[in-house]
Structures are given as C-alpha cells and as structure tokens.
Image 1 (cartoon, helix red, strand yellow):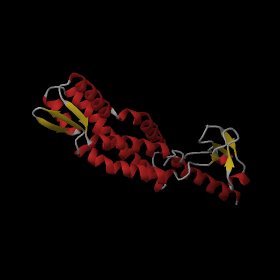
Image 2 (spheres, rainbow, N blue to C red):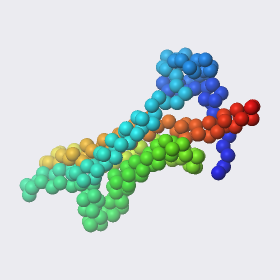
Image 3 (cartoon, helix red, strand yellow):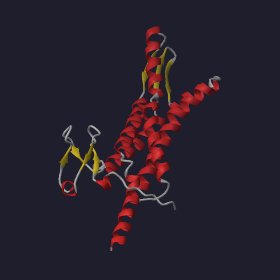
Image 4 (tube, one colour):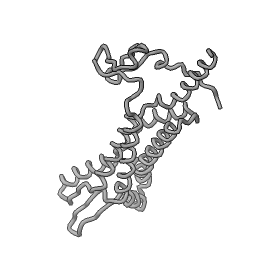
Length: 221
C-alpha cells in the first residue's frame, strides 16, 4: 500500500470557513471551544459538522425515490384516443423502435445510468469513509469531484417534459402533464446533489493523518 504524507492544513491549525472560504488559523485552545470566522462571523469547524449523517440521509432518500422514478409514469399524454402514460424506459424503447437510437441512448444514459452511477459512487465514498478504508484515496477524491461536476446535468428528462408540455399546449394537439415519476426523478437528482454537497472529501484523508500523528508520537516516545 502506498504511503501518503498528508501534512494537512488542519494539522497546522488552519481551518477553512464554510461560509466565505477564508482560511483561518485556529490555536489548540480555540479548537476546544466555538470559534468564529473573523470575516463573515460563521462558526468555524475542522470538518463539516455531521457531514456523514447528512450525506447518508440524503443518499438513502434518493435510493427510495429512484424506484418510483423509474416505475411510475414521467409523462401523461391526453389525446382524443385516450391517455398514454410513459415511463422513462418506455420512452427510451419508443425512441429506439422509431430509429431515434442516438436520442434513446442520451435519455437512457442521462436518466437511468447517470443517476444510478451517482448513487453507487456516493455509496462507495460513504462506506469507505465509514470503514476508514485506505483504498485509493486519490481516485476516490477525483470521483467526488466528478460527482460535483455532473450533478446539475442530470435533469434532462425534466427539461424534455417541460419543453414538450409547452410545445404541445401551444399547438393544441393534446394535453401533456408531468407524471408522478417526474417528481420522483427530480427528487433523486436534488437529493444526490445534496448528499454530495454535505459530504466532506477531506474525511477520505483523515485516516492517513491519524497514521502520521501516531507515528510522530511513537517517534517522540
């Protein structure tokens, strides 16, 4: 296993304000009691408070919402011939059968694959931090940065449904409404984003910092 010399800012008494991003020096005596940012007055913390608890709660809620998001209709189309209910997968199958396979692939990747991979990635990050794993910390940190980048781009289905509703209503061809699956899908996207926002990636490296401190104290003894 590779050896990582962390030498983090926290070990040097430097904490980042979660409100304005100012790097503040906190002495050992101050660390034992509440400290405030000298610029914005927000409370200073060595790590995001209750980071794992919030991240777990939002992730579990996203997992619960992922099931109805894929099983319930995301779009209701009312025509003279009746009402058609389309789920995400029925829409993908319809596009594929009609030869629009590039669009079908885009919808499948953005609406099914990406949310599932985001959930699995957050699950991996939270479990490895919970178990204080030393496995591939750099790769896990890069994975977290990737999650932050792709998070806002997972709302493709909601955009498509909104666009279709506006176009069809204008042309008076039929009535299209967003189904309960759209609400669940939007909830999955928002909840996974909140889970990633509350996760503190510095927790990945804390286990190595603890190793450094133990070795330093052993050397001093």
